[in-house]
Length: 210
Image 1 (cartoon, rainbow, N blue to C red):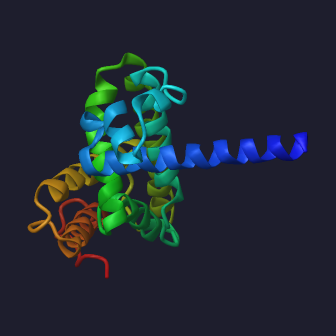
Image 2 (cartoon, rainbow, N blue to C red):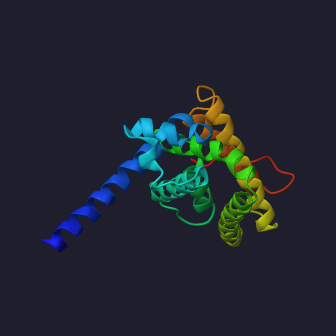
């Protein structure tokens, strides 16, 4: 009886924690990090703020959990088959863009988290590391495309930094003006950008990738 009771208690605790996490995510999706408070999560959950302090003794604990959720959900998003060379670079950049409702919600939360990260030196360093590792992965794909002759010679790290800057800028434009920067236009703009990268210097870029 004791063992059964303990198992049930543990299960109840884990189920409650999942409910709390879902409530945190819904608040983030609706209001971003600026609206993430214990009171907002408690209201979403239909519970008291006192209950939530068992999970998040301070606001920083709530923010840390929210950032962890964001990273987990971003990592769990379906990804395109990468292919090789320039196609692999294109796939990775397309996966960043807000082309679907889920990707849009995730990007809205990421952008809303920037102000929170910039206000905390530890989070600033963490985010710098995340974007640095992302550039490293892009640089690997740039180098692979260069090896296949699909991109002209050049510094892979520098090209990757430019590609990351382009796509993050496009994310922001699409979030602020979704009617203007539709998924179709985002893809067109990305393909035009990549065609420009692929064109030898001094020549007219080829047609965008299909």
